[in-house]
Length: 122
Image (cartoon, rainbow, N blue to C red):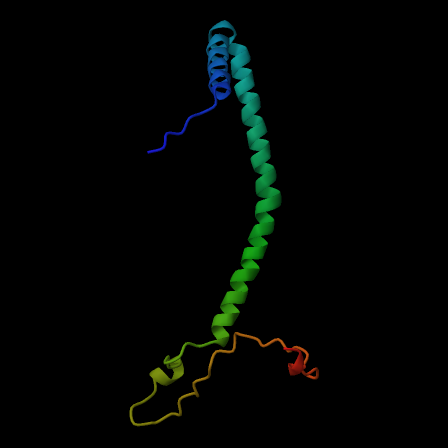
């Protein structure tokens, strides 16, 4: 198996960071507490900006997508399903079943119909 190695510089930076954290914890605990609170406030501010700006915009797009899906499902009734009106009808009365239609969710994009290909150039 391949063993993933890290660069020695990353190890040195992590060691110095841990050493500085332990040193500050014992030498100046109030300063460490203030730094932790400050970092927490910055993270909370960034999260609030993300939530109120980016996430709400995505929610609107998702709601529009879900609405379009719902409308599409209403238009395209699955084959073989009998509408609710016909399933609860009385026995002995025969209702005409709706014609089975092919799904029309694919659209043909019309191209240049008038222009004919020159088959001699092939």
